[in-house]
Every structure is written in structure tokens, then in C-alpha cells.
Image 1 (tube, one colour):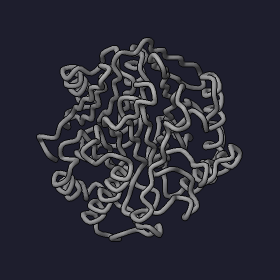
Image 2 (spheres, one colour):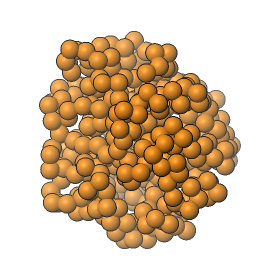
Image 3 (cartoon, rainbow, N blue to C red):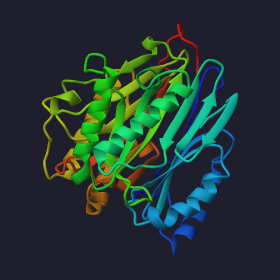
Image 4 (spheres, rainbow, N blue to C red):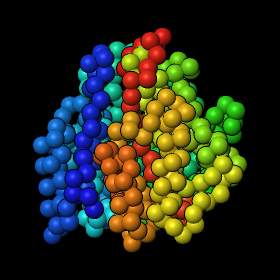
Length: 374
């Protein structure tokens, strides 16, 4: 793994609103507690953990044992804390990603038995992160339905609906080879009820293997919503000559969402893999060439929306097989991602033939003065 990989990037807007992004992986140590303590010390030394922390997501090797320690930590923070069973590819037990938004007028965290919602208020917008804590349905389709029903209530409390307010989801699926189809069926059914179609567009999303501390919980979803946007501020990212619309293979999510403010654009790239314009897997069995094609697809999405891969501020790289980590890491260090904080995790993709998937958040100055700045 590259020793000189950056762990933090910043964006400073014209109005003085600073955003900071972190991706950090522990060094393998004697135990989880030792690794976590060392990782958090590094995070704090780079300015992590301050009042402007909005999202803190831990990727861990054994959530059943490790979640209690992380939950005690989360109770002391006002940010949205997510714990996902996705082991770091370097053999460590924990990695983290974080997103900080400067100048919040107010940050509020509400947690009850059902879930957590964290809101970050700016003068013209309010961002929120939401996640349910429980599941009762016996299968992944039913649990996906439960996630969205709970999210409906969370969005209503923010004054809108899921289609109006939610623009990015991260869905973690236990044993994805067995449970992904139910995830898709449950999500498709909810989107049908919302009236979402390929023409009206869906929601940007990553659906990847990951688990929680509860063995019976087959799905967990983190969702990002934004209150105060005009419809024209939301742009759906497409590059149909490179990668197909998702509905061609009967799933419902957007390749990415661009949110345009007066002073910047946010780009939320969905999980992207080595796929072509017809929905086929490109370079089966060759992880190096799949990585290259994945980056090519991501760049196409960015370039068609006023950006480039160099605008990425953080990325997460998911591997089906740990054995591929050095090959993928070398390929990434020959790409623009060498300058971007990113994590490398063991987390199989939704199709067994896909060996690598990447998602990320980008920010640049391609705003529109017609809209209010962030």
C-alpha cells in the first residue's frame, strides 16, 4: 500500500465555507482498541473531530465485537456516525472516512430506538444524514422496504419527501451474492410507489457488501438529503456512451448526482465498475484493466458535468478479493486518485464478475450565481 497517500483534502468556497474530507486507514496493530486509538489520534492531529464534523464512517473487520466501542464514542459526538463491516485491505481492523462542513449555523443530532438523523443548517440550505438502526423483516426485500418507510418519516420531519430531498444513498448488504436481488426488488418497488422512472430519474447510490453488528440485519442504508434546493440545482450524471443507464439491467439508481450551488458543485458519484454502454462487464477476470475502465467511466461522468477526476476530494475502493489489493493500489497510484484520499476495502460488488468498484465525492467551483451559495 502507498505510504504517501494523502489523508485529507480541503475545499474553500468564495463565501468562506470550507469543506474538509478525510480517508484514513489504521496501521495493523496488536488489537482493535490500539488501532482505533492511534487512528483517532492521527485524525485529530489533522483537524478531525471538531465542531464542523458532519459525517464519520468507520469501516471495520468485526462489527459484532467492535461496534460497542464505537457506539460509546459516537454518543459523545454530534455528527452522524456509521459503522460498516468492510475490512481494510491492508490487514488492519479499522479505517475511517469523514466529511466536515465549516460555518454551520446549527448542527443537531436526534437519535431514538429507530434511527439517527443529523442536520447541518446553513443560511439557505439544511443538509441531513439519516440511518435506521433496526430491522424486523426476514429478507432483504422486506428490510429494504423498511429502510425507505423509515426514511419517508425522516424526510417528512425535514418538510419534504424522499424524492424531493434525498439525493444520495449508501446501501450495505450482508452476503451480497444472496441478498442483492432482494435489495433491488425492494428498492424498485418503493421507487415505483414514489413514481420515479428513468425519465424522472432515481437517486444516486452505492449498493455494496457490508454488514452491521446484528447478524439478522441484511441491509443498512445511510442517506443524504438537502432542504432548500430548487429542482434545477439537481443534475443527474450520465455518460451513456461509456456506461449504460442502470434500468437496462433492471436496477434503479443514478450514476451520480451533481448539486449546483452559487459558489460550487458537489458531485456524488455512485458505485462505479467496469461496465460498458450495453451493461456488460468489461475485462472479465482482469482486475488491473477493470480498475482502469472504472476510472475511465468515472472520468466520463465528471467531464460531462463540468468536472474531472482531479476534483475528487475522497473515494472508496471496494475489492471482491483481498489478493487483488496490491495490483489495484498500483493502478490507482498511476491515476488521478494518487492525489485523492481514498480507502481500499474488502467488499464484494453486486455482480461476481466485477472485481472492483469505486465511489466518491467531488467538489469544484462550477457553480451558478443564479442560486444561493452553500
